[in-house]
Image (cartoon, rainbow, N blue to C red; front, top):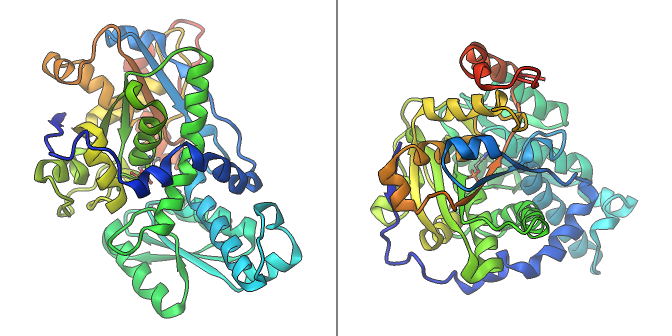
Length: 409
Ligand SMILES: Cc1ncc(COP(=O)(O)O)c(C=O)c1O
């Protein structure tokens, strides 16, 4: 692993007024209202005591998004939420009156939705969320995927009724293609990444993630435990920025340190932090953390993380695999966590950081630290999950107590 400490002159500066408004406590009521039709479950916050002990930190909290919904990842919150907002906004425009999210299933709103097409590019999870939102609202969804997106992930989007179009190249090529085609076809682009002049919809996608952040803060308060550090995996950075922005606005002086974790093979935020400006990095060998394979940060995310992230970690592939395996084969007393390739990357960052004295020192990680991570996905590609874990039982199963459930349930 490599660590780059944030040296930007913007580090520690307050967020812009717009970002404070978009990601502060006041939006939560609105988020809850528009999220209600999706009927998502509250997810668990696990305490991983045995793993924390081996890392010589005070506590490890893990918010488990694998069980958020049948979509299997936290992304279920963002894309679907943005689709609902777009449909409600269109209904308000056409009906010339306020429309509530609870009216989404009314015949008149469904009739309006039937005329609408939403489109996005995806590595898998965001597209599933957009497809699920479109199905719920009754509009059409066209999802663009790049060559690296696995067939089971494409099938999952088709099962939700979306049309899926494969594009040659990387995630960034699929983003370029959706913009080009949607402009001609008059489709609404529901992107989880933002660029100059395109911020409103990605802001809504990120606002959807706040549901999870609000939940975790409430869970921490109930248990009277506040994190000192949060390790956040990043693709384009929307997830990490939404969490960091909301937590820092809610917790102000008590806000924890935020550390961004990316695969070394797709470390666009890490490289942007070194350059002190958003940079597009060249595509290289693919990372197995497929959902994090992005080569250019989201503009909103970069702006927020440049102010709030104290450090940026670039992970080796083997480090991420080790975390995923540890979650599948936990130490005695810790819960089993179903964690897909990108789900455990934040934890992998903690494990790699905690093992190095110099990194512990730089991040202020010690026996008093309370570290929060998010398992952002379950086994969203089951076959791949099983193949990545095959053989791990021999190494990791040893640490688990006899009689403990281990491995794939
Ligand atoms: C499971 C999972 N974790 C993390 C991320 C990273 O989110 P972002 O691209 O907003 O940084 C993604 C993105 O698709 C994801 O699917």
